[in-house]
Amino acid sequence: MKNDISKKETWAWLWILPVIAILSLFYVVPIVKVGLYSFTNASFFGGKFHYTLNTYGFLFSSGTFWIMLKTTLLFVIASVIFQFLLGFSISLALVDGENRKLLGTTFVRTAVLSAWVIPGVVIGIVWKLLLTGASYGILNYYIKVLTGYAIPFLSSPTWALVSIIIANVWRGTAFSMIILYGGLKQVPQELYEAAQIDGASAWKRLIHVTIPQLKQVIFINLALITIYTFNTFDMIMALTGGGPGRATEVLSIYSYDSVFERWALSQGAASAIVLLVINLIIVIFYYRTMKVGENNA
Image (tube, rainbow, N blue to C red):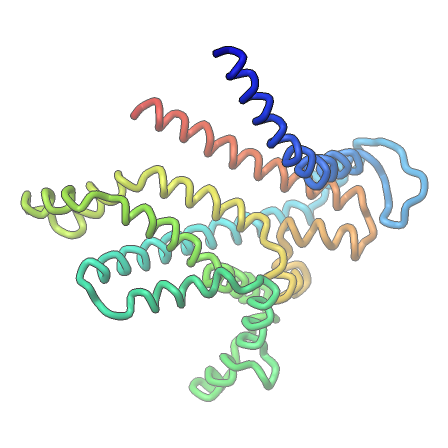
């Protein structure tokens, strides 16, 4: 019996080793290299460099960094809240529509999911065509016809931040919807029937039946969309490029600009490590909370 178990373990490791090798080559090694560069004064153009802590000292003492971090947090918090609320609302409407056998629920689900499969660069370009103040700006054309003036969606710092939040919410709502929709389909209908017999209103059924049953699914959804939003790059780069000025420069854009605009490889690496640490904190918090929830259950 022990020999059979050891053979199975050996074969399991043989199957897993190629995956470990690929992950190490394309993920672990680059992360280690970025981490090493973050402790140097290396430039994008190469040349000699030495190891130092001055890069992190400059990063954390820079007022620009903290303004950018504040912008990132505003972007993430607003995006996550509205993605979750809209995704939850749509998933509830879809499940209720399916229970009532209404036509069009499949079409609505497909239409919402289409936003998730479109590449971020394309989404950024489409929203730029909608929001730009140029003569070809679709949304501003109709706003100007109705009100007589245009809204500076992409040229005003405040409106630009609102614009990338709206575009990101439009994109990310689909992910929240499909996760929560899957969770809602697993809630036993008997619980709703029992609550309805007891005289519970729709609101009370939502609070006392639906949300408790979806607690783990909701937390998984929030953790994932928070990580995705922190790492958003392509959509913002295509829509605003981090502008006007630095009004929409989030952490991912800051890392890119540090390396490819300011040629400061070490600063870009340091800001990328900060982003990695934030993601790790979210993952650890999610894991520990899930373990506590399982133990309490």
